Image 1 (spheres, helix red, strand yellow):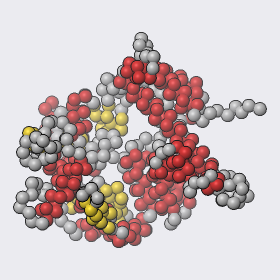
Image 2 (cartoon, helix red, strand yellow; image 1 turned 30 degrees about the vertical axis):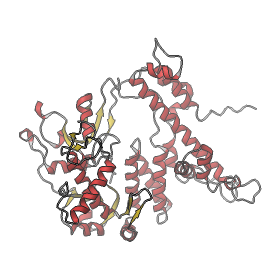
Image 3 (cartoon, helix red, strand yellow; image 1 turned 60 degrees about the vertical axis):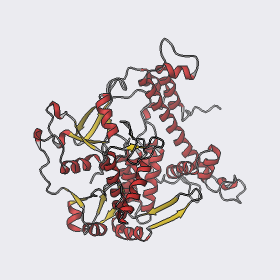
Image 4 (cartoon, one colour; image 1 turned 135 degrees about the horizontal axis):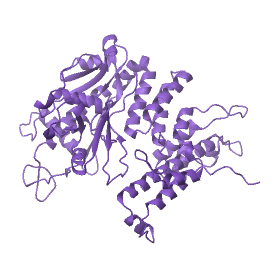
Length: 494
C-alpha cells in the first residue's frame, strides 16, 4: 500500500523551484548555474537567497524532529539505553555534528530544539505533551503552503506591494528557538509548567521575525521576569564568578580573558566604546609601509575604516591602562564615559524588579541598580516618569545629548534591521532633512551607524516611523515592491 502522506519538504522545494524559475532571465537564461546567476537581476538574486533560507529552515526543523525521534528511540538490544548511544554517539548533538559534518555547537542547537518540540513517551508508551508547543508551532512554515501547487502559484503570481514573493518565512528560526528554550529551561527549575508555557508564548510573540540578537535579548528578559524573586541571588552569583586571566601565548601575544558580571561589564564596554568612538571621529594616519596608526604617513582613505573593530578595542584597552599608569605619552586622552541604565518608574520606587544597561543583554536586579547609582557618570533613563523638553524645532541643527539618549532608548543603537552597533557608534539622522526644513525633533530623528547613514543617503532608502517603530523602505532597484523592513529595538510588553 502506497502512503499518501506529503513530503515535509515538498512545499519548500516547490517554492524554491518556482522562485528560481521566475528569477531566470527570459531571454538569456544561461546553460549552467554560474551563467544563470550572472544573468539574474539584483532583485531576483535576493528572492533566490530568501527562498534558500526558507529551504534551509525547513531542512533544519525536520532535522530537529528526526533527531528528537532518534533520541527517544530505545536501543535495539536494550543494553545501551538509547539508539543514540548504541550507535556510538555520546549525545544527539554529537550525532548530528558527525553525521552532517558540522560543528558541535550547530549539532547541539538542532538536538536541543528537537528535544523541545518532540512529544516524549510515558512509561507505558503513551505520547505525552510536547515540552514547548508554542515554539513548535512557530517553527512551522505557514499552513497555506502545505500544498506544493500553492507555493508555485504564490511564487509566480504578480505579488501586490507590501508582500514578498515565494515562501513566507516562519516566524521563528531554529537558532532563535534554541535560545528561547535554553533560557526558559534555566528558569524552569523554579517555575510551574503553566508559568513556563505562558512565558514561551510571550517570547515567541515578541521574537517573531526578529534578528537573532533581538531574540537573545527578549529571551533573557522573559527568563528574568520568571526569576524576579531570584534576581538578586543571581546577581551575587555572577559577581562571585567574575574571573580575569592573563596568559602569554607561544606566538608571543598575551591573552587577556575576563568574565564579568553585567554591572562590571557596563563600565568596561562603555569605556571602550567611548575611546573607539572618539578615535573614529579623529583623523587617522597610517605608516607608509605598515597598516598601523602611529601619527605619521598618509591619511586613511574615506569610507570603511581599515582597522577592524576588535583591533580598535585592543588599542583602546591599552590606552586605558597606559593612562592609569600615568604615562604622559598616551596618544589619546580618555574620553568621558556614560553608562545608561533603563528602569521603569515602579521599580525605581519599590525596589522590586529589574533594570537593563545599555549594551549589556543580561538584566540586573534592584540591588545592583542601587550599587551602580552610587557611582558618578550614570544616566538613569526612567521610563514613565517626567523628562526633559526634547523637541527643539528647526532653530537647532544638531540633536542634543538628551535627545540622543531618548533616541537610544527607542532604537537601541543603530536602528537598521540586524545592525549590532551600540548608541555610542551612531549618529542622529534627520528623517526630513534639516536643510529642507525638517525639525530637530524626536519624531524626525533616528540613530544610524556611519555605514547605514551613508546607505540612506547614497542609495535613497526611505524611513517611516510608525508608533515609535522605524520601518526602512528599500529603493525600487533593490525591491520593486519596496516592502518595509522593521528596524529598531523590540520592546517587551508589560
